Amino acid sequence: MKLPILNELKKHPKGLFVLFFLEVWERFSYYGMRAILVLFLVSNKNEANPGMGWDQNNALELYGWYTALVYIACIPGGLISDKFLGKKRSLIVGGWLLCFGHLSLALQSNFFFFLGLVLIILGVGLLKPNISSLVGHLY
Image (cartoon, rainbow, N blue to C red):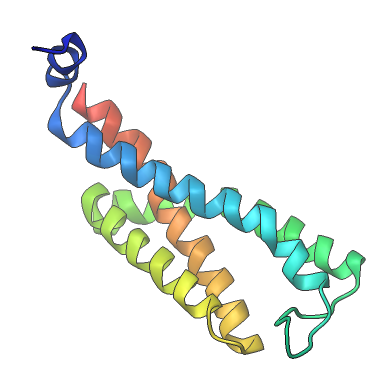
């Protein structure tokens, strides 16, 4: 039995599926961080909870900076891609930066926490503008 949807999927370029799942992974990362970042920052640090114990105003300020910088980083990320790395290499470098950023967040240290946020911002800055551009080049 042939499924008609399989015939429709075969009409699209092969690279579309890779770019689609890369975009899904990046968006999951971004919205996941948006969901838990403030909760992690305001929860009290104790043996059962590795939170940071910040007050709500400081946590929301960092959240605002993180959210803004993720989108602002797309401007230099696009320029770096156009002038130096190229679109495909920018996706690879951005993906690795994103991975290392999330791995860095797993370590319980203020240095690694802020390093992780910076790496995530840089990774998204390289990924976001180039995924859209590569999808446009496929069609």
